[in-house]
Amino acid sequence: TARAYHEAIAGIRAGGLDSNISIKLTSFGLLLDRELCHRLVDDLVADAGRQQMFVRLDMEDSPCTTDTLNVYRRLRERHQNVGIVLQAYMRRSMDDIRVLLPLKPNVRVCKGIYVEPRTVAYKDPFTINQNFALMVETLLANGCYVGIATHDEKLVWEGLRIVGRLGLPREAYEFQMLLGVDEELRQIIVDGGHRLRVYVPFGARWYAYSVRRLKENPAIAGHVIKRI
Image 1: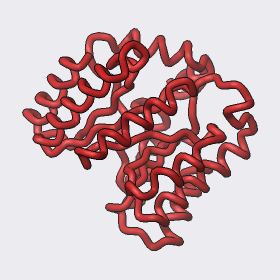
Image 2 (image 1 turned 90 degrees about the vertical axis):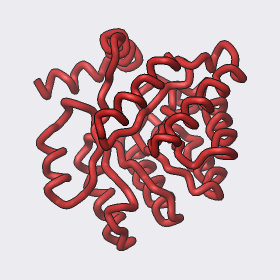
Image 3 (image 1 turned 90 degrees about the horizontal axis):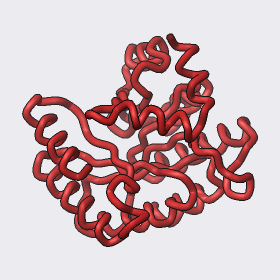
């Protein structure tokens, strides 16, 4: 996996693409050997930095949250070109933001897709959306760069409301969406003058990745079918 991402960095650079990479730490051995995981990812972030490229640490299910944040904080001791993901359905996310704020983190905010117990994750869609907006507003108001990752137009509206109220330039944030999901809304956002990044699965194991995402949350299949 590490070799594949180093090759991806080289390919992005060679192609002159305006792109960065997003990685899941479990694929770098997080659950097997945390120190090995950190070394592999540290090498990757350093490689990306030499190419003026950014690396995002994806957030996975709740047993991985604390370890993922710990790896992120260690990486930030040496690197600036690395960001994190926080999930709006997690009850702990606002507390995590307060801890991270001194680092001025680059954060992707998403709803969250893993099936979690109610003790750790909100279940009510309205509450999740409210927490999403609160997280985005808190981060942006404190000078953090935010990737507003959503296909929910209600949350796109909240994002636009927040950046408008704060008077932020387009360089202070971006919207993020998955490849192939609601391309019309994607175009509306771009036509409105806002930056938008598309998340693209890549590599020989793209099918295994897609199946894994479906297993994590079968509701994804419904969203995909609606867009076909």
